[in-house]
Image 1: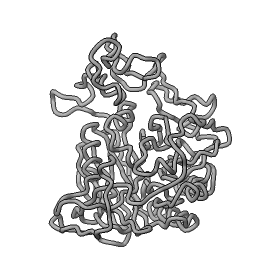
Image 2: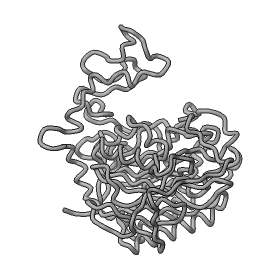
Image 3: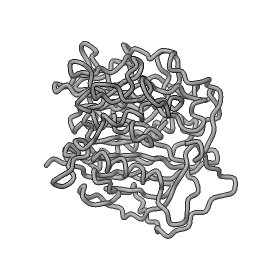
Image 4: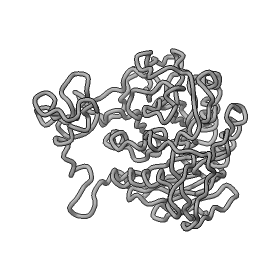
Length: 427
């Protein structure tokens, strides 16, 4: 079967140094291309850095999707015939500042996703997105895009896998926080769990480099559909290039043995309560029961989306669930339809690039708060994990280093300074 070489470039970035960060990302693309990568994932907020002082600084560093950062990635993708997924601070067409990620290939920008689940004080910097993760039909397979904290919501990950994603790419910034001695990074464990329960490949790309008192997990990882690492985590706050060969079509087989299938065994008609807003939980009966009639998962009111009777998330009437008016989310060429795949998969974008000049903005209704402050250490958890440095097929757990060999003992005791805090209780 055809293998796809997936890469994660764990980079040392500097907050506020947009030009330097652009150069670092382009250099990483060159290294990945030289290694033969087909798909490269970059970290979250590559252009701006993460530990932003306030909304004014975030706004000053943000740029449109057709700005120099993403344009440079498109040009590099075209030059090397590869796919790049990376995060950046975006100023949308309405001037809202977003924590976004794009998927680009030689044809241009294929999708732009705005982070929906904002971590820590990000809500004081960025306007959250309101659209599902895009699933893009590429030359290498069906690739979905999420950002960092998004992967900690099982329901959100499943929205992408139920739309037939083969590979989930997640630009992340995971600040280091204390953990019990000998434990592995909790972030990596969650990624492995996401991969296993959905039988999907996941590539999560972390970052490196101290930033305003914050250090990082250094937990970049590429995981197979069984939940086992194919590359990483390097387990240190340093630059690395991870590489793993993946048979992406393996993610289309959801069977576990002769008797089970992780999607076919689902009972969506019973899951309605998970879509009930927190304030509504515990309602006893009637229209507050959470499971509408007709075996449709979800809540019956018009402002809440349910699952159709076949249990496939996001499939609307006519077997199409066009991506909403967020013009930054995987719009296909031509009639601007959000679903262009011939098999009618909901939210799958095929062929054609986003025309940045013609994008329709989400508008101001999804503003989640004022843009007036930001903080550091907005993520929690970390841990070392010993890993040799090489490239291997997808049935072996390995990593590839950018001229560095990462080895760390699982018994290593983590030490952190007294002034480093964790916001785990905010999760």
